[in-house]
Amino acid sequence: MRDCVIIKWGGSLITDKEIMCTADLDIINSLANVTKQCLDENLDIVIVHGAGSFGHLRAKHWRLNEGLIDSNNFYPQDDCKNQKQAVNIVRNEMLTLNGVVSKALQDIGLNVSIQPPHKWAKNTGSDFDGDIQSTFSNYQDSICITFGDVVNCDGEKEFGILSGDDLVVRLCKEIPNVKRLIFAVGGVDGILKRPPSDDHPSDLIEEWSPGMNFEGSHNSEIDVTGGIGLKAARGSEVADLGIEVLIVNGSYPDRVFSACIGENVIGTKIIA
Image 1 (cartoon, one colour):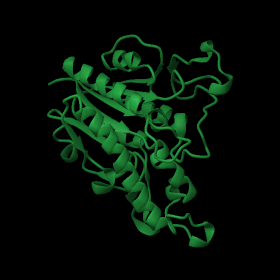
Image 2: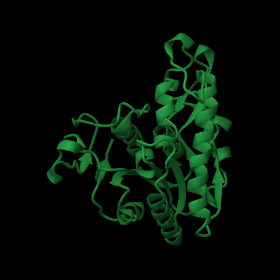
Image 3: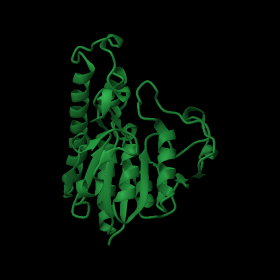
Image 4: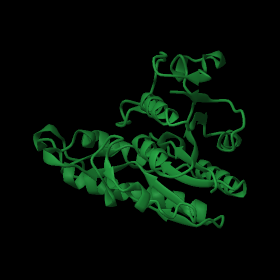
């Protein structure tokens, strides 16, 4: 059985998070080429991508991560009057971004299999309800792609955001022969001791374990899923399974490829 690598394409990496629904085609195409290189190295690849400007901006406005809230708490948008409309719009935005990702892979001759979480998963957090092994049973025959999404939830909450960082935990636990989990992030080389705006090259934490402090930074005006801190925590859960976990700067495709094949690379290794 071939080794499998789970790659998380960060939303801030593959989109312009300041402009609604704007994909970074150059980055997406470069990551698609890395995926092809990995297949040439006899690896199976599963891709999980974030939302960036295709989900976070509207999800933040409508507080979708909190579930159903009284409508008096919101100002309507021109194209969206309530939370339930926002749920459907965000789901469609994610499908649009996924279409861009999928096309980049298909354009270089790769077969893809798309698994939108709102069709197969329920509830949020890494203990969400969903049949991973059945949903991703064809991961050896095509590039399986899934993504952070708005999913249905039990009880009064009704819906919530299932983060890609939670999805990768379950994929690593339940897909056979996962060797590595790679977080390809935007704008930073890994986990830093200080926020990116204040950092120096020596601030890169080359190996991180729970209990180590860092001043995590993410755009709280946009990001509703936890930023670098959640990646570190979920990465440690995966590392506890004996799986290699790395956070690397996805703007450098050679680093992503090197991480996928197990070479030494600039980035942060997560340990349990």
